[in-house]
Every structure is written in structure tokens, then in C-alpha cells.
Amino acid sequence: MTSETDATDMTDASDAEAGLDTAASRPTRPAGGEGPELSIVTPLDVPGQPRLDLDRALEAILFIADEPLSVVTLAAAVARPVAEIRASIARLRADYDGAGASGEPRTDLPDEAHAARGIRRGFELREVGGGWRFYVREEYDALVADFVLTQSATRLSQAALETLSVIAYKQPISRSSIASIRAVNVDSVVRTLLGRGLITEVATDAETGAILYGTTDLLLANLGINSIDELPHISPLLDDGQEGFDRD
Image (tube, rainbow, N blue to C red; front, side, top):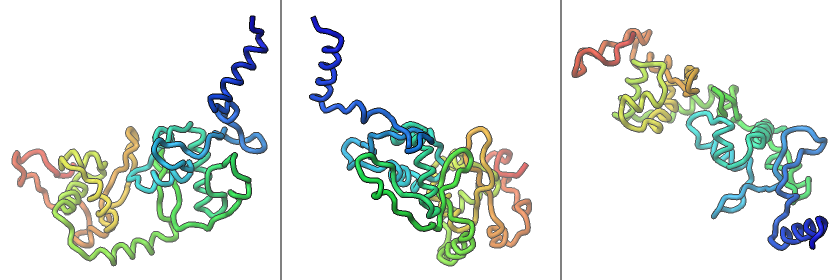
């Protein structure tokens, strides 16, 4: 017969032979016992990819995001617990503010490897509409807007003009609603209009969290009108003459 102690020893031996580190698979807490649990299994393992740092992985995803991403969405993207995502976002924000260490805490490297501090960046990670997204810091808004406008002297494409018309007549409107009206993907066009300063984010849909867009004073100036209400009625030009873009 095999005693309970012998069975335990055999199990431990089997784990060791299989290359399993049961202690390394359990979460741990930062020094001091405070804060969210952090996985010891770092960096991020992605099949077929180099081993990735969690903070840098989230940074890459957020960099290409067109709309704020929730912690649940980010957690699903990297297959890590929500608590770790929140901790990573906190580290990223501190990093961009120049006040925190950069990179995910590691257990296989000495602490000095993550002790370096960064500089305050010209952008920040901001929570908007229940999600996270990169934004230019407020003090650089005027500079960036001036740069974008001076670098954007080319004419708008037909697709951009059509999208701008939809936004002007139906604002505030979400990107998905614009795409539904035009029956095409409008992501790149909306980015272009945002870059030209002709539209801006005006609100967030309370139910879906989607960003709602509206026109800016720059568009009014370019059109030579004082208010969107001065836009001409276009429903008579549409096929049915009834439903269209006339403002309510």
C-alpha cells in the first residue's frame, strides 16, 4: 500500500519531471501585501511570438485603438485577469507621467532592472466613457491642432465630404451609425476629419459607450455660416423626398 505521504511525494515528483512549477503558477501580491495580485508567470506568453511584457502589450493595443477600450476588452485581448490589467494601466499612467517604473513586475530579474524612471510624455492614458485611450496632454492641444491644420492643405476626398455631411446633419452621431448610413467602413475617414479639426468628440452614448461626433467651429468658418442650423435642407434632393438629413 502507498501511504498518503508517499502519494504526495509521488505527485510532487511527477510535477517536477513534467517541468511544472506549481509555486510559479500561483498569483502573488506586491511587496507589503497591498494592491492587486500580480501573476508570476511573466512576461506574456503568446504562441508563436516572443515573450511579451504585459505593459508593452497593452500599450501596443491602445496605440492603434480608435475608441476607448474597457479593462474587460483588454483583459480578453491578452488573456490576463482584470486585476492585472488595472495594475498595468496604473503603471503605464505613472510611466507616462514620468513618476513610475516602466514594465511589468518580474520575478526572474533583480528589482534594479525595473527601477529606472521615465520622463513626462506629451500624451497621457485617459479613462473616457468607461474605457482607456491615448490623448494629447491638454497643454499641447493648441500646438498639435495648429500643426495638423497647417499640414492639411489638401482637398478632402469624396468619401470624406460625404462622411462630413452625414455628421453635420445627424450630429451627434456614432461611428457605427455613420457607417450604417454610408454602407462602408468610415474609420479612416473619421480619423482624417478629426485630424483636420473639422469634427470632434462631443459626447458618449450612455447605453453603448460609443463616442459621438459633431462638427467644429472650424467647419462653420470654412462654410461661412454662423450655425449648423443654417445648413440647407437636402431632403428634397433625395429619392423619396421625405427621409433624409434634415435636422429635427
